[in-house]
Length: 126
Image 1 (spheres, rainbow, N blue to C red):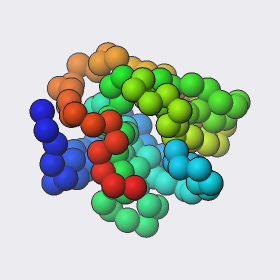
Image 2: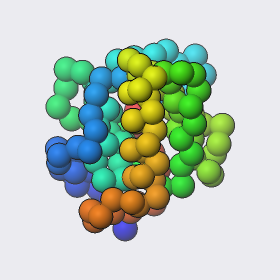
Image 3: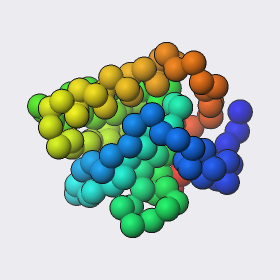
């Protein structure tokens, strides 16, 4: 299925399985940690500027790897480009474990909700 930006924005407004403000650093060299509202909806991870209603970006969680990087931090990388990592910093080790478990469930489709498929894992411009 192809995606379009309006459909993704509508999906980003749906109730989230998890949502929190986390530190986030993108995959670009020299990228710095920024506070983002992060929402897990079905098998998408949306991230927002903390003062905006529309997402800055979205990650399709199929074919991804979730790895603990430090006690309260994890990363998401994709099988087709494992060097391209998105890093997240949580407030505690417990919160980190909760996020990692939820992301792994979403990645493998443990949710009984309708799953959304797209051709690209990095869907909205950063």
